[in-house]
Amino acid sequence: MEHKKAFDFLLKKSISMDFKELATHIKKVGPLKIKTSNMKFVHHLVKIIVGQQLSVKSAAAIWKRTEKILNESNYKKPNDSLNKKFKSAGLSRQKIEYLNGIIFNQELIDMKKKDLIKMDYNQYYDFLIKLKGIGPWSIEMSRIFYVGDPDIFSILDLGLKNAHLKIFDLKTYNQSFYEKFSPFRSYMCLFLWRILEDENVTI
Image (cartoon, rainbow, N blue to C red; front, side):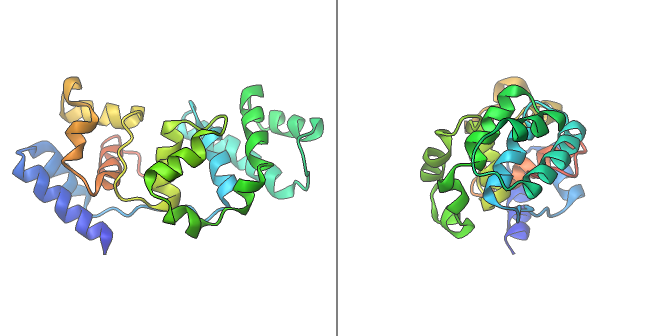
């Protein structure tokens, strides 16, 4: 099982590098699985945008209302009625613009998960970065929690940075520091988020 291999690898690597606090944390938490989303890809991307720059609690509340609108909507193109519903759900004007660019994008609507899994990281990145509202962080979260890529470290994630600072110093917070944990850097993200006691990290 991949998650058990990841646990063993990260624990041994932490011990070998004398990262005692990290090793103790990983051992205490035990193996963690990447929980991938089963929702439509379009809805998955919308959920990421909804959660940008919001607390976990606020994002969850707004997403619940937004998802209901998406499931009940039969609109074929952007319109004022739909925009008003999104606004009432708590979305900003800018996020509504981003959502319209995604939910009416036929290429995204037609995209199957198996096709996304076949893409390497660069192909996946190039496919999504052209979308308004989707930046590097969003792509990395999607790559972990939709595709299930085991080897992504999102250096832009504030939670990962805060977790890192609890056991290491700021000057070591960079991609090269975490390259040593490849090919299981996504699992390292899970362990770091758990330092912040956020057990429900999923996108």
